[in-house]
Length: 236
Image 1 (cartoon, helix red, strand yellow):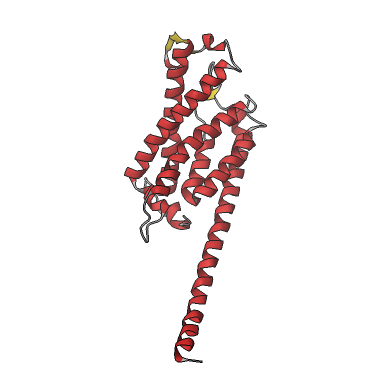
Image 2 (spheres, rainbow, N blue to C red):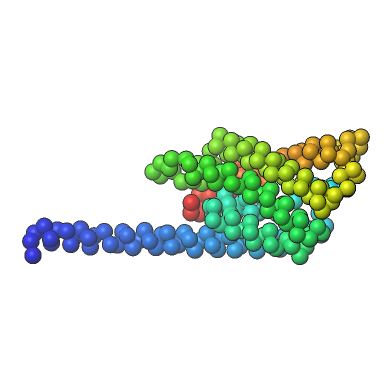
């Protein structure tokens, strides 16, 4: 056995503990992400059971004035990352089915609206050149990045929801568009397709602000209330 061989084997033995530790770290992170998705998914199920039947809804639209379910899913995404956020979204959307007064239509709309908000930062972070020591969570925490992703996500959400609403009013609710108006905005004279277009944009823009701002405050501590959740977990 040559000296070079001995040195090579020694180097290999020295690296193994680090490699094992890295693997354990990734395994622990994966477990934490799954646990986070399960917990937040279950939380959204509980909230759906208690809140969905009693949420105040916009007359003629059957859309909740304030719906906190998406806030749970987006909070999960900000804390535990992409996989956990999407898992909690799927779990929660299916959990809405037994409770939503519109049956499957409400959960489908809720899923589509929230997914539209999440897909933008997911893509942006994927394309973002990752620097050593800079996590995706920290990049999303940057207010410029967050605001940019939020604006783009809101625009995408409005487009997606407008298309879905047009499809719904051309099929399931065909003929009902004539009875839709903007009375909830104090504009009862605006009706039909004009009301649908304006109403969908306003409602989804308003809800997007709440869906993004509240989780940001909760996770990243915009109010500086102490220990920030993103710093506690740091899993993505």
